[in-house]
Image (cartoon, rainbow, N blue to C red; front, side, top):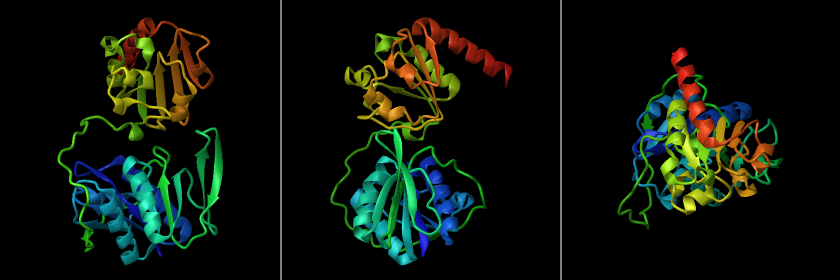
Length: 318
């Protein structure tokens, strides 16, 4: 049996989340003594490079580029049966989460989402964060077929081999029940779940007209911008930037929180960040308890000065 990884594509190109999923799939296959197979659906430029991250074979199913979880789940489940795969891996993205449950049901498989460990040899056990990241739990999947989703920014893509030829896989995709009439996407920005550097701000900014200093910091660092829920609710920033328990949960390498008090709902979505930096004029702000580094001061004084220091540092290190 084999490990099958669904490699997502966005606008026809392989996503970073797909590289992480394939890296995880390769490591899992190594632990289980089998091979890792990558599956792409629709247009997927650069699919051959998945071999670099451990996919022994890469297959493509010619189906619609418009993501439909019912159609894609049927394709993935049929591909798993055709290729003899008993372990299916998805990225813990919006697409992966919508597919994992459907595929698990079709394959009568056990499912664990947002895993952060490779299964141990012998019993198929994996670890994941629980209670909004305050603890960890270990799960054993005892069913013959297994489905997991991989937490973002947990397994850094590692090059272990070279490109492999992409083979066409004949799978009869079912007719979609949903007709896509239009689609709006944000281009040129690393999606928050994939971002390793995130600069976020809250109501301490006092208004959307002051967001320039936040965007400037993000540009200097090559980071993605985010915001707290109140900011999105009052339309200072678009809702896709909202991070927290009721927004996007993220696991970046660096999370900079500017003018955010740190309510528990916000912390639940960002406390898996590797390093948290907080800038707030209130020394009693709850966020400081979760911070690795904190600056107590007026953000309108601190952030511009920090931006200038970052510019000088980049200029002297180019």
